[in-house]
Image (cartoon, rainbow, N blue to C red; front, side):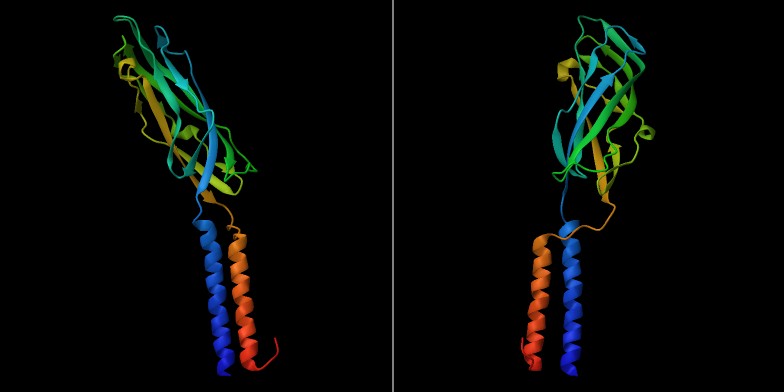
Length: 212
């Protein structure tokens, strides 16, 4: 009777540990997202020669939820004391998830469009007080495969540096990817779990005097 109770308690503990290992094997893994972006700055509200453009990301990767680059706003220099003013000039950045953990996600509810406005003045090649303000209401939540995602733009409003300071200002964002289903255990974890159970079963039979 004691042996039966001991075996039952041990078996329960092993099963609990096995399921914990399954969960840990999925929960501890990074979510690697491969993505690309494209951006445009419109001409509405621009007084003077347009000097602000957006440099897109052709292909890059990050480990969610690390910060990553949406691309760069670029401010070109003007001659002398000439200036260009941006009055609530619209811009948009399109974000596309290409792969998640090395595979094309299905469903893939991207691309999504992030919108905002430019306000301020660029003067000569060394002055800019232009800011890029992002509209958080324009950013939808989206699914990519087994993940529900929320994208947040960091540093809004974003001050755009003048040409004399390099002219490039990076727009940064963060994606929080939440699994919508339980992770599938890795094959090695499953094999270890089953081997342990088989070994304990054999040990119990031998102690009970039964043939393996």
